[in-house]
Length: 232
Image (cartoon, rainbow, N blue to C red):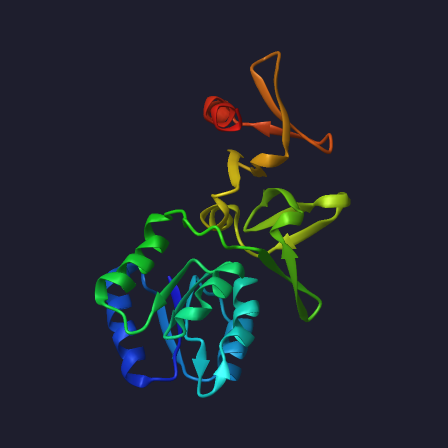
């Protein structure tokens, strides 16, 4: 695990660091603390990470200026902030959790354990997926995403009107974030359930989800019964 803490209050940063070390123990390979927005942006651009713990107020700078960059990365982002009124906005961008300050140990532990357990978030507020586009970040509305295909460490987002975008997050990480409206129907595919028009059984025990736009996506044999039940 490679973890970055972005927090301008030294006392809070040290507390987060202690708890992070206690939870991840031997799996923790690096833990870095940065207290300014600019340095954090530079670090994220130049280092491999698994998790960013981000405050939303950094010496007067808004953490939201960093958030859109963070959520476009391959790692998960957890907000640790006193700005509770910004929780819904943060979830809209696709954070794994929002821990309000002041926080108790068990609340931060619960958030960090989502990384270990790969627990699916119950948040329904996610409205965008941020993708990197030639030195800028583009926000893709969830409403435009029909299905998602795993492509190694990355994913391909298949959108309305035949568009396609590449996302840096793996299928597993997106599954954690989008489980309220998407289902993992195959080891390589997640589909928005409302886009399924028909479930087809072909010879040789092949199962297919036909979408409203006519595209056909394979359904894994072990997932067929569960997907059919949820779709009906």
